[in-house]
Image (cartoon, one colour):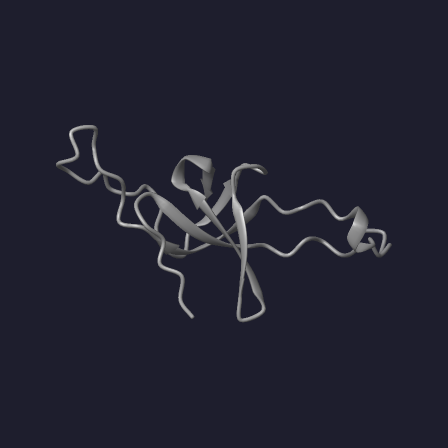
Length: 97
């Protein structure tokens, strides 16, 4: 199954949470901080302007690694993998380098 986001929505595969700290201590699942970083795997075509005549292009593209807001995303599972669907407005930054 493929997810095709509509309008200015994007699909992000979240980064894995850290399981150990530098000292080697293993962190249990209940204490792990939820990741707010992930890779964009699908992008909608963009939303329409206020007049509804022209599409506004997206600022992110497939393959971008992004940081996003903790709230405002919808979690879905596809073929056993977790993905987040969110508005482009919920993306805070594109990580470069």
